[in-house]
Amino acid sequence: MVRRVELSFAPELRIVFVDRERALRQVYKFGERGVRNPIVVYGPEGCGKTAWLKQAALILKELGYETFYINPLHREAIPHTDVGEVANRLTEAVVELSGVAQVKLATLAVLLVKELLAKWRRGRVAVLVDDVFQAIGLDRAETYVKELLGLIEYPPQSYEKIVAIVASSEGVTRKRVGRHRWALLKSMWNMSRKGFEELYEELRKAASGRVADLDDVWVLTGGNPYMLSRLYQANWNPAAVVRELIVARSLFRDFVLKWRKHLEVLVEDPDAVSEPGFPEELRVELVEKNLMVYDIYFRDPELWIDEPPPERDPEVGIGRYAAWQTPLHREAVRVALKEFSS
Image 1 (spheres, rainbow, N blue to C red):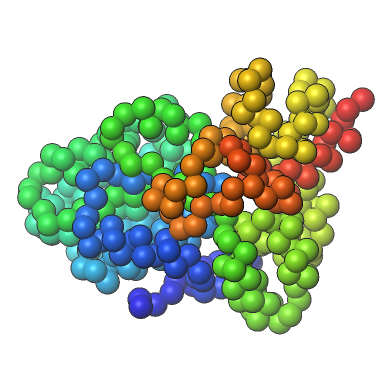
Image 2: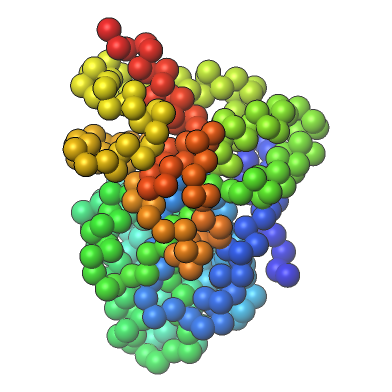
């Protein structure tokens, strides 16, 4: 097994990648066969997509791919290649201070694959692009996916295998991208209880035991690694994290008063968002605010990266057709209802 990447969990605290065994086996399958369409992965913010992509980059390198991970939104690029010019161009783009650096990085990901195939005639190339739609603008999501498909279908030179994976935490573009044949859409969910326990144990060791009770943390996070990090940084004070979410998602008086009746139902049953007559405007806003995930119609493992969520889990806000991104997101709405309903 290739070495596990070490990831930043909190300031001055790093934790090794754990669990996601099925997701890693899927990467090996992608690498062994290559892909015929770009893989576009959607999932809740902080569920572990970035960690998975960085681990996937190491796996694909081990399988003989010229590989690079790029996050245009956060201006991060990790090349796994012996082509120095490629690595240098990525580094230059990362440190560029112009306002178009994010778009340039996203575009560079496509251009470098073309050059690796044409100029350096590399047979195996992999590009893993994280949070790209947020960086280039949601209106360009379809075009970007089509460009990646073009690399696969109409390369400048013949190649042995290509792997192209895009990950996004926003769900607005899902229907736009999905209406074409250009990509294979998959979903990723928060960690399973077993995997979350492994992460919790790594945190307990790294943090010298300064952790809250596992059961309490599970009920608050629903297995979301980022929310575990936020709780740790907030000294295990969930009220502080909830206030952060209220501010970050603009869950203020105008929003609450406009949608109070529907929000009161949703905090008890997330599936209410899929009921006939539920306001489409609110449904879209809940997805745009990254509060809920909608259209969870199938738990077929082939449609998911790693394990799908359970059929239902009211304790952590998972319904049959929809779910809160985490229990803390649901709690933020519940607290906002109490604060701003009058």
